[in-house]
Length: 530
Image (spheres, rainbow, N blue to C red):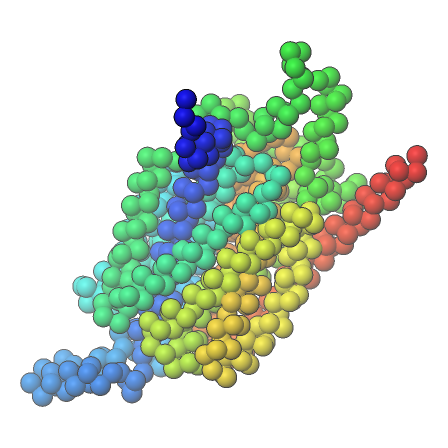
């Protein structure tokens, strides 16, 4: 009998459960990539909605002159360069209003999205959100083809899109939490969370391809992509391992303690083993009642809603807030996301003004920030898994981010080379904490031991953390639009202040993690002595 080919041997070396988990990891990655892909066009198109007429290419000026000389009086120097109503002197405030309308709707909707998502099948809920988002994203672009110059039309498209996009994050993070345990959650989710940066990069490239010739397609094409991925979601998304008769991560842990023909070991051995497996990331956030936190034995799940039909009750909003660490990480994310989303929506315009590039060139260059974000998210997850200290990892990156932002604002005036290097470094330090909190930290807290295994709390906890962060995401671009006319330096001062505030909010958790580590080392030393 001939040996099996290497590819087949590799294929059969993985279990059925492992193949399903890999499939879910890739599928949810692609699904949320399409969400961020559809958010990026507005930042690329800003430079086209209001551009300096003196920088229009000679061929365009020649074409305008030909049209004017032919007697077509509808063309003027102003209408040729700008898209009404963004042709006014307060165009930065108007463009900021587009960002704010989307992000404000997103922030408000997120608080309700998680609660609704707990009570509906994830696959249906996510599919609805993706199809709706595709429609409203394309609707914004249709304003170009139908020559719409009413600000209310564009604000409506942004607000509606902001609401329906809230279906995405609680759904995918709950699905990932169902399929993956805590062992290497930071690294796995750090890699998985690169969908944010990948989506931003693809969104920039797709929008940039049409921005100078037909900016309407910069919205229509991403809208079609996310709608198509919504259909893929409906056809293939598996919400929970039990739906395909696979073991959940918690069951995998129990399988490790099977003992031959007699089945399980004694209950005492199982209890000790499971306690040893308890993830220390959230253990160090727990202390006694003297610190005002909830003991690990306290149950915060309410038994008022069992409409989901599986016998496991959903958690209340205030019950989720009582989980140790939720409030601190939520407020920290508010400031971290403020910085990240200011870059997301305003970086291309900043590069266009400072480096004197066209809209496409500025959009392409801005993708380097997201390239850095990929490395930052993976690095943060890897370090936090190794140290088992989520708060400390975030704190160190936030501490380094503030001076790095100042350096970036200075070197971006010196040419393209320094700008490229600093974009990657800033992307890593800014997006690292943001990625870690929205993924591994949210999943840790949503499956906290005080919940007694109620995985349905994960959607609500995730929505609270990301919803609070989205308040900062709404404020950041708004403040940038208000501060930019007085100088870009003021925008960077605002971003550095936000990073400092995010760090201060984590101080208590960082100290608890360090204290927990010291106590653990003392206990270990005493055990060795005995």
